[in-house]
Image (tube, rainbow, N blue to C red; front, side, top):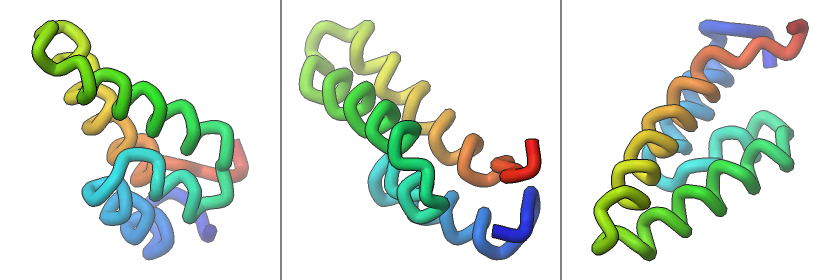
Length: 74
């Protein structure tokens, strides 16, 4: 990836819209992808408890922003 604001980061952010963690996987960050996916799926599965659903929504947005602002040089 060329860095923050590059086309690769935009593509990764779009991938995260479909499934949180997918954009990080596209960027080659496997551990971050697993963490985002596990937390999102766990929270979404327990949506009826309200708080995990809110956490899942926050992680969903956080994954998109994280992929869009990723800078491999940092």
